[in-house]
Image (cartoon, rainbow, N blue to C red; front, side, top):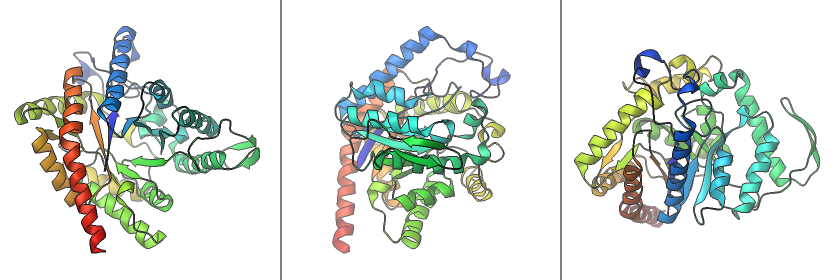
Length: 383
């Protein structure tokens, strides 16, 4: 059981008339509201918090990629990872992830990830994603072919990491006469690849086929159970193996404080800000035509909107309360091997964030890890 601290790096200040005047914090929210002085303060604060996660003993710290929005100030997660590479010592740096169809040259991703892997001596996790629908508006890209581009870019990057060059690649979307990546990765055969996802059935099958760790984000727990069960079933029935806990992750909304009522009140305030400000996205930006298959769209609608809410309620409370809930979730999900602990939806303070991080890692995680070890030992003995 491993713990990963995930940071959104959000913008925090919105105009008073945001709710009435602006339909989204993505794509069309004017960048005239961005203040570079405030931005410098936030970047340095957020980097401090990510570095603090390393000193607390989190197994990994996570960054991600989004474009032209106030939700997260990370258009280039590899730059953020580069800042962290020499300022952290033990935690893995998980890029969750590089949006493969959003970059015109996948060899740049192969090069940048190899550099990070070498500098950190193998502490890099390379997450690959397609990017959410909004990215395709922000970067003026056609989402219709994004999965094909994703698959070709993935195969090319893995080949560039593992096959001695130079070699030729003449694909449908990318053509290179010389593929000859310098440096090559420190990790052999290549950095671990993860598949974070909102629940696409195609992504689940792709992850299961390659035995990539999978985690679903922003998903009610009933839907998480369906998705993890789907991964297990596909792995067993189509690819002939039983996935271990290390391949299955859980990323609940969570907030830990030293008092149940305080935690619940503060989490509710953060949740309102997140939904009304940071993640305010109209459906036509979130799911543009051609972005998902009919099968995935049906699953998305069934999992998200039939339950009456797009996001699950946060697990909020004292360490004891949060631990009890996580143990119940663990049993309901038939186990998981890593947990992604998010923080800072935009209006939490530095003090609130670091308290949450500290209480989870020092008081919740040791007991959750012990419970996981007991459960997996029992399953091993039974088999």
